[in-house]
Structures are given as C-alpha cells and as structure tokens.
Length: 282
Length: 293
Image 1 (cartoon, rainbow over the protein chains, first blue to last red):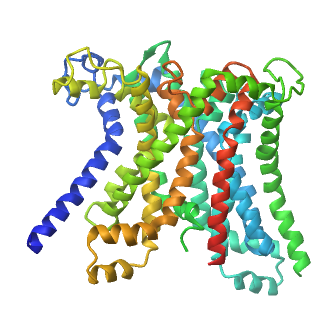
Image 2 (cartoon, each protein chain N blue to C red; image 1 turned 180 degrees about the horizontal axis):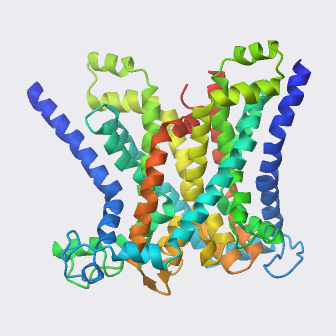
C-alpha cells in the first residue's frame, strides 16, 4: 500500500504531465510560427539544420517583405473596416430584437429565440452557392461590401441569443419606474436599458469582430482580386506565388494576426460559452 | 397595454427577422431550387430537371469519396475530441498557479482564425521541410529523404485532416466541459468518495453520467463544426491526393464555384441538411428539457 504522500506525488506528476502534453500539442503550431518568422531563408530551407534552433542570426526580412511588398497591410485595413461595419449592423438589428424577445412577446419570445438560435446552425457551406449569385446580381462581387451584407447573417442570430439572456437578467421594475415617469417603453429601452447593458454589448462587439476575422468560406467565394481580400483569405491564398510558399512571411502574418484576435476572444470566452451551453446547464 | 407591448415588440424584432429570412431563408430555398435545376454560372435562366443532379452525383466516384470522408472525419474527430477534452477538463478544473496562462495556450487553436492555423499545419507537414520528418530522421526511424509525404499519401493525408480538426476542436470542447463541470454539485462525488468509491468508479459511475448533457452539447457543436467545414481540407490538401480527403463542402465548392456548375454544387451541399436537421432536433430536445426543469 503506497503511503499518502507517495499517492499525492504521483497524482501531481500525472496532472502536470497531462497538462504539459496538451499544451505542447495545442500550442506547438504557434511556437513554430515564431521560429519561422525570424529565421533566415538559408537556415529555414536546409534539412541538415536543426529546425528547433537558430543556426544563423535571426532576421527581420520576412516581416519587411510582409509589410512592404505584399497586400498584408491592405488586408488588415479591409478586415478592420468590414469588422466595424458588421459590428454596427449587428448591434442595430440585434439589440431591439433581443429586447423585444426578452420582454415584450411573452412565451412566444422564447420560442422565436430558439428558432433564431437554430439558424446559427445553418453553415456557410450550405448557402455560399446561392449567395454567390445574389451577390453577383447586386453587383457586389469582388468588393468587401458583399461581406458587409452577408456576415450579419451569422452574427445577428447568435448576438440576439446572447443579448436575450442578458436583458432577462435586468429587473423589469427599472423600465416600469421610467414609464411611470412618463417615458414610452421604447424610450425606456434606449435611454435606460441600452446604457446599462454595456457589458452585454461589449461581448457582442468582440464576438462579432472575431467572427468576421475568422470567416473564410464567404470571403473566398465572393472576392477574387488580391487588393480586396480579408486577412483570413489573403494570407493563406495570396502569400503563395504560383507554387512558391513564402513560409517565413506566411508564418509571420499568421502569428501577428492570430495573437491579438486570440487575446481578445480569450477575454470574453466564458460569456460566449454561456451562450452555447444554455439549455444543458441550469 | 399587452396589445401595445406586442405591437412594439413586433416592430422591434421585425428588421432582424426580415434580415435573417432574406439572407438565410431565401438562399436556402434558392439552394434547394438550384439542386433540382440546370443552373450554371454564366447562363441566365435555369429549368427544372427533377432528380437528375442527384442521380448523376450519386454515381460520381468523387461524391462517394466525399460523403464517406465527411462521415469518417466527423466521427473520428468527435471520438478523439471527447476523450481528450474530458481528460483535459478534469486536469484544468482545480485552480493552480499559472492556470490562466495555461488555459490561454490551450485555447489558441480555437480562438485563432482557422485558415491561419491550418496554413501553420501545412508548414509543419511540408513535404520537404516538415519538422516531424526531421525529428523522425534524427531518431533514425527513417533514412534522410525517404520519409513519407504527410499530405501526399491518401491515408496520411486523411489522418492529417482529422488531426487538424481535433487540434481545433479540443479547446472548444474543453471549455464547454469546464463550464458544465462547474454546474455539477460537488457534494455527490465527495459523498461517493467517502462511501469508498475509488477514482475510476467515481469517474465512470458518477462524473461521466452527470456530464452526459454537457458532453452532448460539445458533440453536437463539434459535429457541425467538422461536418460543414471546408477550410481545413481546402488549405491542407484541396481534397487531394485523388479525392482521398475530399469532403462534401469542399466538393460543393470545387463543383459549384470553381467548376461553375451551380446545380450540381447545390445538390452536393444539400446532403449536409439531414445531419443538420438531426442536430437541430437534439438541440431542441435539450432546450425543451431545460425549459421544463
């Protein structure tokens, strides 16, 4: 019979090694991006060299190429612009809808809310063929406006769902009191409820923005010219010339783009997860 | 008052509903129409052709491969993801020093854009400069220049696609399970331990059954994210070699967009619908159960 201390030691060792194995497996590609970003090409493309260390001095050449000789900066700007516009459209549509479903429509509100949540399950890969025709008919092909139009179709449903939960947690006495003071219900909504909902709104803003940066299928389908790309498509498709992959710059771009998005998303993750798990945890 | 509320409510959710109907409902209907038509990019009109598209795609070897791969990839990835994320969520549950940072590292694959993570893997699995190859040569498993091409051989390419899907989904499903585990009352496993139930017995007879609802949420979302995804396949292998990693979404893209055959592409993507309907059914059931409870 092993002693208590011994048992505790093995439990701890097991715990640490499980964590270590998963951290290495999951974070390795990002570590590998860091290495490739700063490695000279003759070091990078030499199978004799140990790939884990810098056999030659680190270099900033890949970053210079990325920022000055590719469309990367342009793609960042496109992504930021689409992100901001989609966030705006999402808030304008989702805030009133979520409030209405949480407060004004009674039992039907919950059912419509669930129906809206289910549309979140309809994937881009089911809709991209007809939407490509719609976008072409509207003359939006090859411009970022096609994405400004289409992206809210997946950000609005989930945002309504998140905000519904949020509004339900606000006591309705707040609006009742305001209405006694002479405000209409709608005024009570945008003068009182919206201002105190900043944390819910912020969650929607971050969620929408990260989804925009992560989308791939629509951006790939609707837009072909290099100058109009989003980062998610521009980097993996347009940093390849013919068959030549610029691995150093490619990995640099992946790293610089992913880490801020990851940090932002990570901060709000628990709230998104609460949105996913509604129904299973109560 | 109630009538007034209902009117205001309808006015407030109408714009969002109209938008969703126009951009999800209408394209979905159009996809179904295309699937029964001869629509092509470049020709203005289209005609009803009945089940012609379905008949021809069902006979095409590419479609058969894509359907089989979609199912194989989704099922394999879900099994691996559930096992790994159950273990990982148990390991992450108790507070320890540096837990926040460890959680961030573990979450990276999920929170970073998938197209960028996939291209990172393409570099790791490169035909010549793969780090995996280098390590295996260094360990004398392979002679130099004789290691397999990870993305160039059918079975290895399939394994690579599954690997990348797992890599992306393990973090997601881990956080879902962590959220679920916090909802499990602590006193039941503790009481079981006092009554003499060992670690494994507590795990299989108490913890896992209590986690069943949350595991099912993770599986439902994981299935959708794998089954309807084309990004991983498109970037890693573009469906090759010889359609060995082709999946329904990537084949629909290759046929409908790159090949201009809207009708056949739409018909291929319609095959995603039965799985989505099934998942929607299970989610509704879960939501209903929560409403009753």
